[in-house]
Image (cartoon, rainbow, N blue to C red; front, side, top):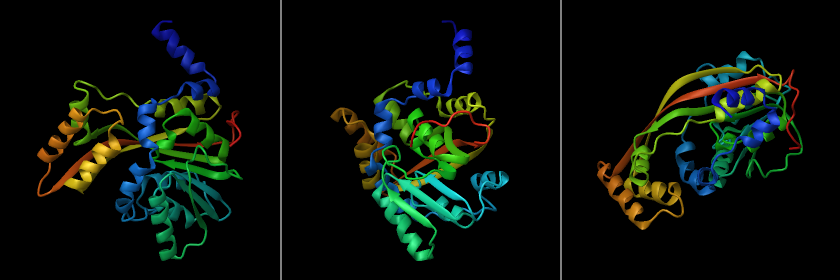
Length: 287
């Protein structure tokens, strides 16, 4: 099949076929679905401020669609420390946040108690494995690896009654992780993230016209050298990484430390997608 035929085939493929074909290599997904990786980040995430409807691009996208009111039920997939759940709870009737990390859920529940918010519930579980007893008016997936393959997106669609919203980092660079990648696999280039075009095609071929928008973002994260060694070597590297490569990463982190700390700078274009289920002719599978 030539390239033109391949493109034409993809453009007319059924949502089911695209969902089945949209896979992320297990070596990548296993790392993203390791709860320990997100447990390590919980102390950082619990300090982040709750986004506001006036200043946050993602919340403004939701507001633009008039998606949430005082009768709405909302699901926050990969809720982390719950910051978007809390923001959504200001306008919704009830919000459910789910995350694979027990430490993230602990941080979310701590802030829930601190703020005295009653209309938010947090669930510690793997989104793909959890058996939900209801569908939701609005489902969001903000910067979560649960949307890195067709299985996650299929379940998201199955749980959505009215509106869906996603946000994903793409065209990402990382001042520390990229250097480590070159140590382990010299010459390896960034692979294009297929999540955005896959989501768009699934929705388009299901009769939906999604709204796509994007904005640039930069994050700085500082860890102690000891924390960085644990994070990059124990939580980021594949289980079969050789001791020689691990030693090279240790040396690299020592070289890039300053006053006992390692700072990574991440630059990314955040792509957001919004859609209404009103004209959808595909509902996924039983959630």
